[in-house]
Amino acid sequence: MEINRHPKILKRENTALLIIDIQEKILNVMAHKERVIENTKKLIEGMKILRVPIFYTEQYPKGLGETAKALKELLEGEAIQKMSFSCSGAKDLFPTLIERNLTQIVVCGIESHVCVQQTTLDLIANGFQVDLPADAVSSRREIDYQTALNRMAKNGAEVTTTESVLFELLEVCGTPEFKAVSKIVK
Image 1 (tube, rainbow, N blue to C red):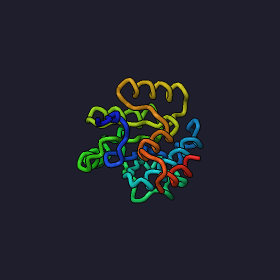
Image 2 (cartoon, rainbow, N blue to C red):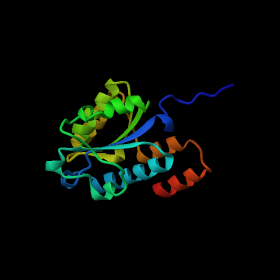
Image 3 (cartoon, rainbow, N blue to C red):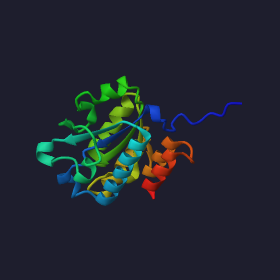
């Protein structure tokens, strides 16, 4: 008898990490900014071990600056620059995800109620599954953060945590990848 796994459980071959607008100038006014940086770093390091593609955006970098240095030093390639709040307006991001059959998108970043929320809703509208680690997103105000998480969940986002995401992608323990990821989350 074959045992089915839930279809919403993340699979490496279909997953990508999307880091939205964690930029120096706006980061300083975010609630729980240290938590967001720490958990985004864990996601980046874990995704690299698991060979999951990583994309990152910058909203109007001329005004808001580049991606935070603590993250930028871990990231490869150039940021996808955008002027639209939703990443649906960010160059060829959505078409690239579709071409590569990346249907499960782990979204982290700032602000929860603006760029993260609009991107999440647009991803869902285009048939993607969005996994949203609540410990890797933030807003300036708690009410905006909580309201955005609730709205995104009501519209189909899987609200989760950084550690849950990484262990879903691992699937099993006892592997070299498990040992490496376990060190990251401790």
